[in-house]
Length: 341
Ligand SMILES: Nc1ncnc2c1ncn2[C@@H]1O[C@H](COP(=O)(O)OP(=O)(O)OP(=O)(O)O)[C@@H](O)[C@H]1O
Ligand SMILES: [Mg+2]
Image (cartoon, rainbow, N blue to C red; front, side, top):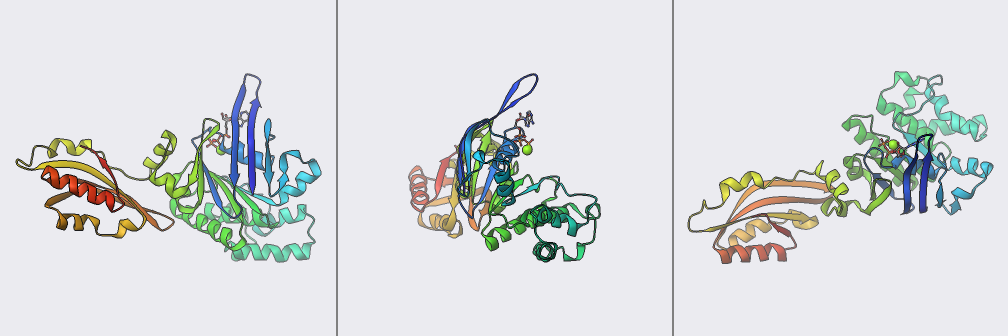
């Protein structure tokens, strides 16, 4: 759906040249919700704004739905943009127009006859759950309601692609969830491709199929969301994930543990699980099978798209042989094991 090839964007200011994107290449599939996560200043907004040519790339090409968007003339671009909706952190509604007329606006620009446009606006109001707010003005709405108007307006011309620049960053967690659910519903119902940028891993977790990490103007990592959560491979993705997935700090236990079981050995391990093994009683079968005690020190379980994953920190206590056998048993049961001490 989107093919970005060797995209570079340099802002020339009076004092210096700022490389906001450095040779970025990325492919986004039709119908997916693709997230781009990065810290402030990483180049996220620049990237998303290059896709509808609100920013002109310095180098490289962008193909959207088979059309080389970077090679269009003004009129062609005007038409192409009608098929690319965009929503913003600050909603960008017209304060002098009521909700109905805000959603009407892009239809007027596209030259849709008023009767037809009014029918479309009503459909959109219904889709975003705001039929009762048609005659109200933006400053009488909550943030979540404003973003629903933003979404309705972005969908007015039946786009194939929706770009979202931090659309939930100004909202509380509960409202964020409801807006993300709306985006997910629209994605499924309309088979709409959604590209969203965020600095919040929770947003990625709740709604995205795949994710790219952008850092310091370039793409560091691309993958499906579950793999990134269970196996983040760069320092940037690790820090984003650590911020929302709790892992324990084994240092906290180390003082109390070792040497406290006179005749038996003890080993501190972290067991990580993904998918079905999360629901199986592997630990209890291990205890039954081997002469071993397992002291559960910490546990955490989370879900990405209904796939459970998590980790458990265990102290295994027993003979050296029993500990080794137990660890083999856990590994053979499909769990990943890290020896902490
Ligand atoms: N119009 C501009 N002129 C000059 N420099 C700019 C312009 N827009 C962005 N930049 C610079 O380009 C870099 C990338 O900015 P960008 O807005 O793309 O970051 P971002 O990832 O969206 O950050 P944030 O999360 O804070 O929105 C930054 O160093 C920024 O200062
Ligand atoms: Mg930005």
